[in-house]
Picture 1 (cartoon, helix red, strand yellow):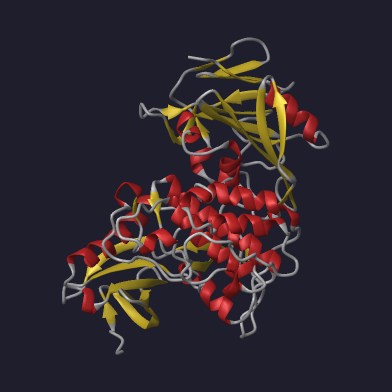
Picture 2 (cartoon, one colour):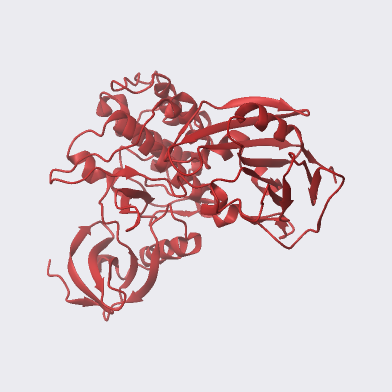
Length: 471
């Protein structure tokens, strides 16, 4: 294949890969002094309107979702012969398929990596999108940036087979990769939803964690019969086998409902059991080890994820009484010396289109998100989140990859049962506590950084002071 000299304004350096539907080139943007991946629709498919639309759908989806766990799209264009191309962020550290080709990944790293992939797919599921082709080749790695040369992001890529859930049934063509494709994807007219992705994630888990990845499940599973037992590699917590067995069940109803639920089950089964930094599997060429980094790791979620920050405006906030603070239907009891600010949960919207309520409380609430020395808490209320996630599932999306989680616990405070996960961190904030509960039809979320040497007692007291007014 002869490389073009240029595609649009980009100088072409080399071929990155060839697939059934597209060719990917490494391009150089001289204006911005950066490299990009340019995905071009294959010539033999250029006149198939359905495939062309699917190609453009991928770019539209990535642009619309615009999330740090997904490969980013910069722009789209068209070659002189009419074929479309998409300009994507370059995953400069290759794919999971590349790494597996050089040998098995150490079990602790592989298990945490599976958790990263689940969290990325959970982003799609939250937006009503099913991927349908989760394979090692579609899990990519990208440098985190010059400020963290050893860290990297895990990205979900190749959404060319993805569609909105509302349109994900009634396929007329087989879609997916054998060995990772859910059984129902092989049957035209079958309903394909998030549980198909759960199957693909389970098969990824088998590939990463099973002692015999090929024997644990055949490429084309037969209808129900006793499933082969999954024998795990040394060093993998034994409870993970049952999680993978459920994720790869033949019938969709027997699997976890979505990627967030699978991630939560993996966490319970043993993801929290590994401590210490996660290291990248070395490549054949000499290279420094790279730590997997969750987007937002080692910093409080309010600072890293703008959607979780309380911001002024919206519902009027008032003090209900001495020592309390109210934002919409939320009222909290303030620890001594603390005050509160904020009125809405940025990025979270109710069925009426209005931002949902939230607040930040701390000795200095306006500085809490940016100053790791300050204790404080973010408390938000979301009916829309309760409609799609359990408290445990929601917390599985809020992990901190550079920190070590303790096993989840439950505590009943003021008649409400909370799920609580504490993260010990080596830098920044020493302790970050994630907690969530259901209150009638709404999810209450509290992220807490307690004062030193207070931990469980302080957290439980704070949670006991959270009240939700029934409308």
